Structures are given as structure tokens and as C-alpha cells.
Length: 114
Image 1: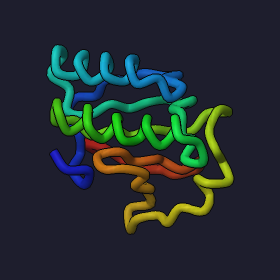
Image 2: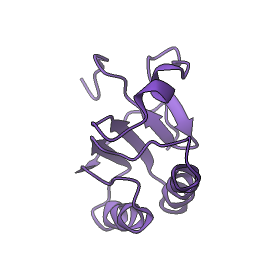
Image 3: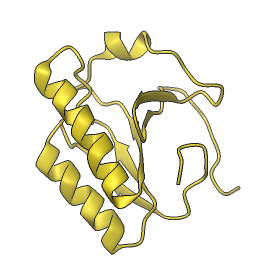
Image 4: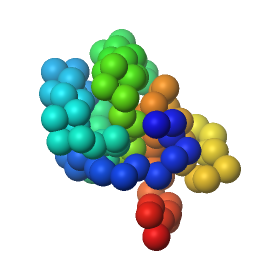
């Protein structure tokens, strides 16, 4: 699935806080439950200003591609909000922060599957 298609089944999670191990486990759970996308609800761990934050994004892309899921996430209070505000939005209003990883900005509205 590429990140422009609607997912048919979601794995919903929260509070990953940039933890690579937890995120890897979420990807494995997505496969186990036949999900084609992960929807992460807050405290994802977007810290591009820090080496660990960049490492986390690299691993998110790797594990999402490894299992064939896309990752959508909304921010929580533990993100770099200044960096998020500076990122360009795509035509659909989402923000690509890494391969297979899309940020859903605050206030954004969308519809999946009607």
C-alpha cells in the first residue's frame, strides 16, 4: 500500500515515545492482525533535532516497509512542535515525515472509506 490509498484495516496505538522496540512490535502486530496501516494517537516521538529522533524515523520507515504498512500519526505533547509546523503539507493536507510515515496535523479532517 502506498500512503495515498485508504487503509482497509487499522492497528490503533498510542504513546510510542520514539521507542524503536515498541514500534517494531506494533508493526508485527499489524501483520498478525492483517492491518495495512498503523494509526498512532499522540506522543509518537517526533524529535528530528536529536540523533535518537532521527534514528527512530529511520527505523519507522524500515519496519513499516518490512511489513508493508503505512504509519499515520497525530501529535501529542511530546513532539517537536516547532519542527512540525515548518514541514510542508501535501495536497491532501498530510505531512510526510519519512518514507511510509505521515503526520496528521492538528485540526486536519479527512475521510477514510466513506
